[in-house]
Image (cartoon, rainbow, N blue to C red):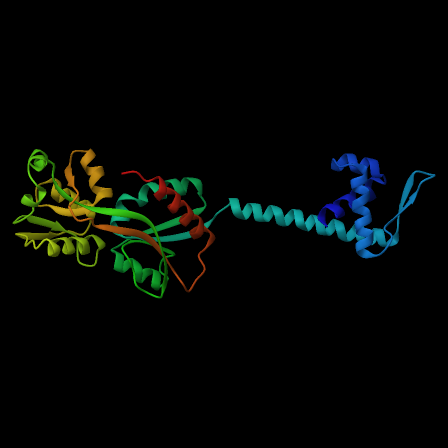
Length: 298
């Protein structure tokens, strides 16, 4: 119908089928068919054609349709532009909560990229352990929570986007010793470094110690993954750490990573409240998060 209306408007304004067809880059028969379709649709004569005088005359009903058709096409053009602008110009505020592993080692690069691509979005980031992030989403204090592990709650929609392996981390000074011995000979009776209870990383460490029947000489509890990594680096103990963190530190010759015989894998996921519809900024950020995680290489 829109193409027919455009043809009709052009014929009325140029008073000529041939010129209208040229302007629209259509054949003259196509323009004639468009006008005929409109006349059949409305059941009235819109244009009187004079073969002898090779001219056309617009009927009263034709002028009425012309005025309305102009309004319709202008409204459609405006709507198309508004939709295009809505898709391209993302703005507003975005509150993101992330657990410490994600917030310290995955999120910064993604946030920098997102901010450059969408400069009109004001981002606020909160870094807490998984349980606190879940509560913040539940209370609507943040728009998106990016967490480690699984949350069993009917309050959220949870979507997994990345699998993170947990590995043992030793001081780099023990690299040669690790290559000579079985790692299991190096983990008993040791000092360990751990995150606080309630963090996803601590849950895996507790599981590992229990399954391997290991009683640490001592456990030093620290409040961030960076602090844990630095403690291992400085010979304060060993730990179970995200491979995402460990491999980056190993490349800097700070610590040594060893994969245990058992596989300890946790899912990174994002959670949003079921009680609200995510904003446009939140939806676009989630899309960027998925793309980023697919290209992530450790």
